[in-house]
Image 1 (cartoon, helix red, strand yellow):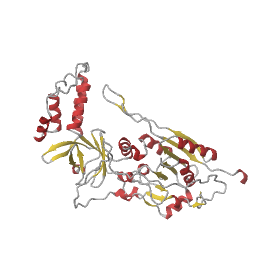
Image 2: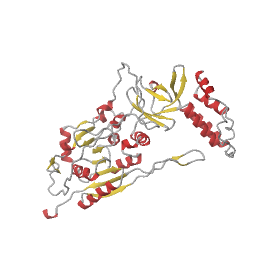
Image 3: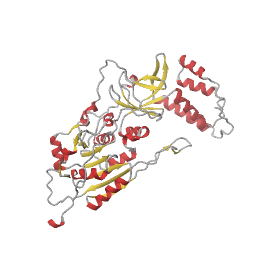
Image 4: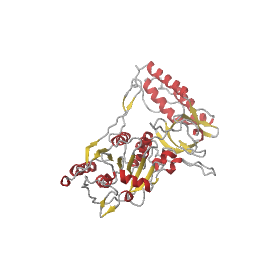
Length: 448
């Protein structure tokens, strides 16, 4: 079995996902001594994050030189959680019926808070001062007190979680903040897409990725440096795959991610896509191309996710003569060699994955299906049902595949807290559709 060795700590030049206040804000950043993160109206240096393990938790503190990130160890955080749970379990008989929200319960003014910040008070001290000077805090229920404390903590003592950019975390971040850039591909749909296509180690996967490189990166992550991921494109310009470079892939994995034009894989002759070196006397293909793949302009993917106002948030890097170490994943997506192309023409690909919401599913599959080896699975994602239904109808008529099915994934997130476990109030009700099947060999009955 092949194992991939991932780095457990960050390094200068690596990409990270910063989770601010438990998912309230998600930001991608490339770590360097000059990179900063904007918290409120001030910038905070990301230099303390270099050399820390993934999963580390930081809190924003106010120092003499401005805001800085201070690492919180798990013992300190676990003690705070235990204290909150004990406070919740003490009294649940109160209610909030007599509390009137007229903005007069807080006796601490903004000028007092600014004065405390200038004197060097920490965020936790400001939160405790707000609780002490609140006239209605003691009258609230334990659940309301916990919500009040959490709301003030997010404002005056924000916390930053250092997450590793995996396929799951990247898909969650983009789907939450900018789903159109990944074709509204949800996490469960991405997982089902990889499963339906049987993406396993030592496989050669043909991918049509028009979702910014998310699908290419997810396939390469699952292969773990074995096999190849061939990102096929039509026209002179390859499709953008900037998201695949956020994964921090090693050189071993990057060498397995290649690009290839469709005209190199299947030469177009009189409008028909024929596979060179395919000598199958007993098989007669009935598919005929009706149109060429149109060159489609995709939105350029950035390495930063949008903030709450919908504007892409860029991690600022001060112009300084620093020799920043380039990311190793920048080599991903080089052109496929002639030896690889000839090998794929002879043997065929192990499976096919398509995520191109802007193109017609049947037109793409017509050209790419002959590139698969027989009994190879394929999976197509689309945001809408009708293009996949049309594609499935043509496959059934021409008897090009078996095991055809259209799946609609469904995912529901739950809030799990003491005495208040329930489905989340805001959730995504739509995750697109996936058409899957297995390529077959069609025999000519008159030749026997």
